[in-house]
Image 1 (cartoon, rainbow, N blue to C red):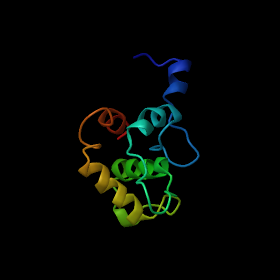
Image 2: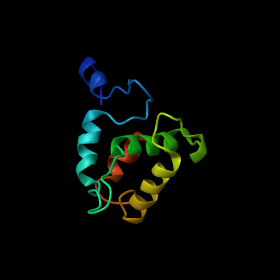
Image 3: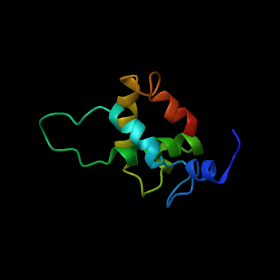
Length: 104
């Protein structure tokens, strides 16, 4: 692919936080594939986009869980979602694989 001004802007990784953060277009592809909140109990308060960004940050920077910056959700929350999504197969196969692997 030839980089033009248009494609450069479309694939730009400039963000307010980290280069590994999802763009709006990537999030639009990923969001419908994530499991809904569990019924009953307390409503979900964690932003799943922040969780996905944290997982991508860890994968792209190769940092340890405990070194996750404080502007992401708590490490244990991110880790819990990561293990849940892994166990459901969301991180290994299917349409989710493409957006996550392209970013890493």
